[in-house]
Image (cartoon, rainbow, N blue to C red):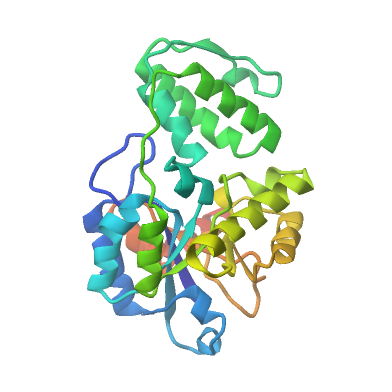
Length: 306
C-alpha cells in the first residue's frame, strides 16, 4: 500500500474561498510523513520493487503549478530531504494565469458589479440569478456554482466561465503561477514535473475527441519543449476522468494517470491510469493526521455501511 499525498497551494496568506495550506501546517505534514514513511517520487516508485515491498512508502504531489509551491513548499521539502512531483497546467504556466476554478472564485470575490444575468437553461433553478447585490451574496453564490460546474459538460462550463469573465471586467486576474525557469530549477533539484493538462478542464466531461486529445497531447509537448522530456504522468484536473479519458491518456503516451479518491494506492489491485491519492487541506493538525493515517476515510466508510 502506498500513500500518495496531494497538495495544491502552500501560503501564509488566507483566502476565504479556497484557503491554501498554511506554511507551518505544511512543515508539520512533511516532518510527520518523512518520519513515518519512506518518501520517494511516484515516477521512480513504479519502476522499482518498492511498490511490492512491505516498506511504508509515501509520495508527495502538487497539482496546478502555483508559485507558492516554489516559494514556500520547496524550502520545507529541502529541509526534510523530500522529493515531490509537480503536475502543471501548461497554459497557466505560459500565461501566468490561475486555473479556471481559481479565476471563477476570484472574480466573484472581488468584483463590484451587481448584474450577472445567469439564466441559462442548463443551470438548475436555484442557480438562476440576475443580480447579486452584496459581496456576501456573490460569495454565497459562487460556493454553489463552482461544484456544479465541475459536473456539467465541457461546453456548458465554458459558456458560464466566458460569461462571468466578460461580465466582471473590473477585476484583474492575479499572477500566481510558476514559470518555466522555476520548473527547470525544480527539475534540476531532482523533483518531477508532470502534466495537469493545458487548461485544467474536467476531462471526464469532454465528449469531443479532438478537444480531449489536444488537452493531453499539447500539454505533454509543451513540457518536452521547455524541459526536454515527455512526462510519464497525467494528473486529472478536479479528479474528473472516465474510461475514454484513460484510453486517450494511454494513446497520448502517458504511462500513469492520477485520480483523487482519498484512498491508499494498492498497485496489485488498482489501475495505473486511476492511481489513488489523498488530498490534504488547511485543517486542524488532528484532522490532518487522521487523513494522513487514512483513519478519517475508514471512519467515514464505517458510518456509510452501518
